[in-house]
Image 1 (cartoon, rainbow, N blue to C red):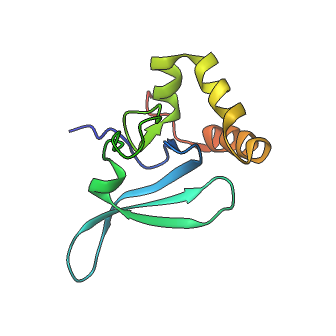
Image 2: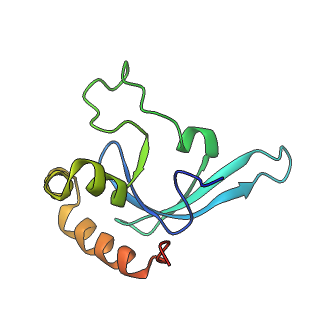
Length: 116
């Protein structure tokens, strides 16, 4: 089964920051719970979040102005479904804009091509 997000994908958090997925199959040594490990593209820190939370939809009751369906969305999917203009507008509105633009471009160049 193809996962919605995969290792190497560059994703946008619904609050506007960008990350690169390191692994979607990290297991807790005691509980066996599945986690996602991801790296920020604005400060190079690594984060771990429970898999179900990472893949979850945005709570629109808590965040009524969110413009994404999911907490994290692949930027390629955003560009495909909402258009390049929408994506570029989002980058311009996101915090840490200049640094994020450069790091997104670098991450996309380094990401494996899943179409081959």
